[in-house]
Each structure stands twice: as C-alpha cells, then as structure tokens.
Length: 233
Image (tube, rainbow, N blue to C red; front, top):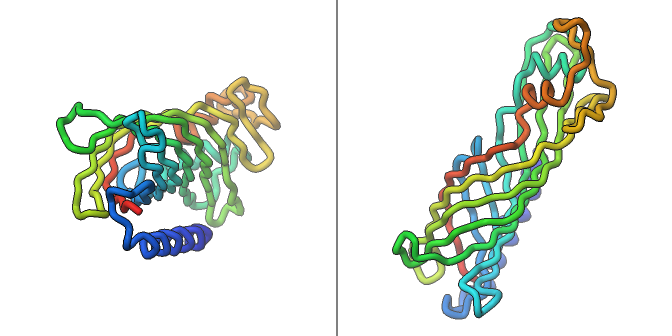
C-alpha cells in the first residue's frame, strides 16, 4: 500500500525523537509531536510537529501537520458520464482519499477556563483523489484536484503526565474550488474546460464545472472532530 511506507517512516521518526528526549524536562520543551484521529468528513488521521512558544512575547505555538482522510468520492454514474462517456455497463466501485497539509497558529486563550486551550487557525492545502472502477465495464479512472484553503478551530489539551497531553479538537476547514481532472478531461471553475463531454440527457449540451463539482465531492467544507495525544520533546 502506498501509504504504508510514509506512515512507517513517520512512526520511526517519532520513536527516535521520543528516545532522544527522555532526559529533557517538560519545562525546557521547545517542540512537540502529536497524533490525532477522528472525523474529518470521513475517517481522518493527522501527524504534526509543533514549535512551542517560538516568539516568547506572544502566547502562541506554531504547528505543521500532515493528514490523510478517507472520503466519499461522489456519484459514480455521473462521474463516468461527465469524464468519460454515457456507458452504463459494469458494477461501480468507488473510493476517495485526501492528503492535507496545514500550518496552525495556536493562540492560547482562557475562553474555556482550562489550563491549555487554544484558538487554532491557518492556511491549508489538499491533494484529493477520487477513484471510480466499473467491474465488467472496462473502466478504471481517477479524478484529482489540488486546493488551497483556510481553517479555524478550538483545541484543549489535558495533562496526562510530564510529557504527554490528551488533546480534543474541533474545527472547520474551507477549501477553494479548483480544476477537476480525470481521464483526458478537465473542468475548471471559470469553465475553461478541456475536452468536456456532452450530456445526452440535455440535448448534448457540454457539461460544465458545476456539473463536475456536483458529481465529484472534492474537499469544500470539512468539519473536524478529533482526539489525539501530544508528546513534548
């Protein structure tokens, strides 16, 4: 599986960092690593690395994270019509996934009257793939998109030990529409499309980006409810 190798590398990296930092007091911690999982419009996982108080005069941490989410890819019948042809044979199989990259500004707040609560916000980037396969229909193709976005949320950390914190997080990411590419066809938000297909149910009018965007569920509004742990190095 393509995802296995990078996950193993991340795990080995985290284990080596944990071992290196065993003799470091949490009061001296300048960095932390974390792992989150939960709902992100689908089952999601996230690994992250945090610089703790990089600017001493500001009550803020800076965090970089990489996530993977299994998503509903969209409507398989419409995807075939819009990106390939009007055939209906074959049994459809579909799956979707997204890798997201996020930079979080974690601003400490007393809003919840808890020891470690944060307002979290920052830029996002998503790499989305929807796969549609028609068993017996000789079709197997991907639809992909690359998107920028913004995110906002709240997070609370509860101390488990001198090094470990339990984390609960909620938030909402918004990704801007971008070009959907599949097979030899693409649809762009400005409708500067490449090789658009004809809609035989609508007098052979060409499909538009709006049609493609309804059929393919690329990231747009992405609610997040996550649980995780943070280890201070």
